[in-house]
Length: 289
Image (cartoon, rainbow, N blue to C red; front, side, top):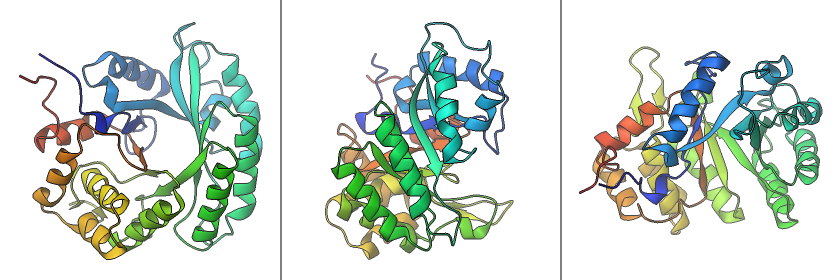
């Protein structure tokens, strides 16, 4: 029996257990993440995401095993200017290995260029890290993507990150808005991450909040279509459908290939996305005949 996941799902889901709505304690998140890393679905799981503020406040002190090298993704909630000190602190702890850094570069309506310039400088200094600039889906977006593309052309390990959900309706982009962003990244050869709202494989409406969430399988199918040259309207159609056949079949045909352009997403639950992949027939629950 094989327990290998299809290659297209490698590292798709970063472990955001400490963030809402999961809001696990750091000790509980560390313990659970260690279990994820030795489970049959370990290839699905990216690093454990931790806020820089928690690290600054000593949340990891004495809680990691020396030499373990647990992969960490640092979320820059302290401001970009304070991140070097946090990275230095983590660099002294051989129980973790910082693999990536993600930071917002502006609030909605603000010019993202000043914050982006700061993150590009940091990425140029910390060449061992993959850095992700969280750019609001608002004013200055396309210019920010141009800046990121230019930095990448110069050898900087920086990519984009976009928010696809939250506690307010305006944080959920429409299918057309998200499709336009995906196509803009494709046109500039800029990889991207997504965050928030992607709890399930298929597009759905939350019965408690009334918010309509994007499905991560929809995003996989839509991004693959964009890579193949689809226009915004066709990409948006895949993002907006609730018909599983429309998105599952295109993903299944690519299951043994590298996931194109989309780096992945953070989820407060690793098990929920995994369960949906099994339910949709894209993963065999750890057993293949």
